[in-house]
Length: 486
Image (tube, rainbow, N blue to C red; front, side, top):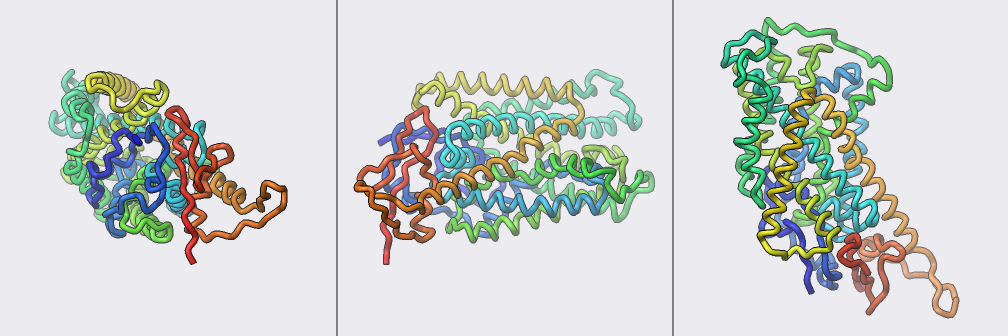
């Protein structure tokens, strides 16, 4: 019985507390050629994870924090001040944590180990394809934002090195923004994006995490001990309208989006229980909230309404401590772009193979040619768009909206479908003679594998549910009915 998947070798990825484990968190969907056996479909058939509870908190925090924190001071300004920004974040945090718990519950019930596979199994083919396309667009837009961030930080660093006055345009072709972005992208990003695997970047990713915390520390320190040449603009105390408050939501969603990463992290735990996972994500979100609030409040109060969408652009170019923060951000983006590209490429590859009905074990030469072509097209398109869309605020507003889909829409659909299936399971059944009979109630552990079998997606065979899907159908995998003990 063959079951193959794309870049889904758990032993090869080996989850640990290292921040580089984010490389595997957006795997492509499973492409099954046959239903799972009873042992494979049951929770006991899956290998026990190695990540501790503390390690899971660390990974979720690292998956949540990133270059998005640069936009939080501007989000506070957009929302209308500190009070409005805090209220909005606290309100959204309830739904963010709820979405993470819902995904863990659905992952456990469906025995799926990645975000898109859970959506496929619970909601069906149409929603599953929509989820995969959304992931591809989201990663594509995030790569554009990363290139814009590189250009923004390089402009400040080059201005100091070339001793150009603040705000003056580039006087030479080799200091022009378009040239420096292109040169950096071709020298560093493209070579890191072509390889088939990216596990080698886990050590570089550790530096990007250190850089993220350093940026937060610098913003807080600069607020407590500000430079004399930094004068804040108007400090807003109330939003102009409720619409203005909600305009800050895309930035917050972009910052807190770790839901796609959360499903593999949950399944990597030694004891993947929903109750334990609730504590993990609550602790992780509280830590992330402290970092984002510290950055957002201090950055906003330092510059007021005059803060730039990228807060580091508001600081003077000559400030060496901030220059180090800019260098850290560039390093973070250089290592994060290939990871996000890898995730998007894996999803596109899975969609292509499923559409073509091709097996994964095809000849290596064909896979290599397709991978290089996909990488070049992806790289050139993101580079061209980054060169001609210099305002990162516009990009964040788009990809922040897509991040909201991962936080609110897909988890909500999964919860609705799971509860509908649960209600269907507990309905009284009739035997072949038409006599009504009551089903014996099952406890949560026995009922979990049954919740997600939607009508028409499975048939009874040999005492268990057997999926009828083939290569072109959604991965609604077969679920066995465990014996009831006691």
